[in-house]
Image (cartoon, helix red, strand yellow):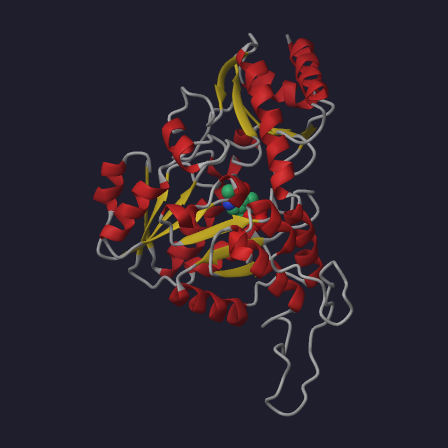
Length: 382
Ligand SMILES: *Cc1c(COP(=O)(O)O)cnc(C)c1O
């Protein structure tokens, strides 16, 4: 029956059925490291909480269902989730990633995974001929984010999947920005979906977490082995916070999108802005792919301050509703300058971004207050 449910219903009920013993409507926080066994070799499904925990199982069932995946694995952070996928690579294996990969992903691949003898190429994933050309017999993963951070580039998931599958590569999509409410990469041919659940999935700036979803049983088996063998697992309280966040994902995302669209309109009409970057704009380079694979275009908006870098730094210090902070995807609106904050570690690489670029994570406050806040901040610096 749950297969027929719509996203909103699944988000509230799948994996979150009332507790069989007590009837508790909310999944209990099983704050335990170990489990009593009835006899040697006869446990009740759980032995030790690195290997498995019922609160984590509920989260894994819930988020896998939302991604239309057969299997899901929860991790202590988005980076831990990515690391676990990448640990299946061997010396000589090759990976293709985008030119504007998340800075942490770029750092993990180029400074940790590459140290183990793994080869990588960074290419423009919108240039499908370049991706096809970068493919090698040893290419194990094509790794993409869409939309990307902070340039909000959109890549065509189905087209990339086709290229990856023309060889022996699997397509990994980082779905952190879109969430499964707006985009389900497995339905477009991706093999593995990875998340920083720290962002929209949690949605309240109170938990760090990661997730991997797949319908490929061999991939899931390997992930399960590594999840237990390496042990980068989330605690039960963190899993509970994520289960709580997921229940309102659809409602939150709709409001994030409403507010983001209104802010895009405001910024487009503002003389202090030289460029607005949002995948929902018909002029955005990835707009056609976005329309094809996304329900709406998300809550992230970037723009370039026409007066330059110093003015951008001043602007973000002047907002009062938008909080100057890293991270994204939560109820409160955040503002930052990627070149000097989240993307400082890639400043001298191919991933460098315009120093006058401002990134907004548009929250759930009243749109009138958000627009008034940006208006007063622009006025103060002009
Ligand atoms: C934040 C983020 C990550 C890393 O996740 P953590 O939970 O911070 O470890 C990976 N990918 C994207 C797109 C992110 O925004």
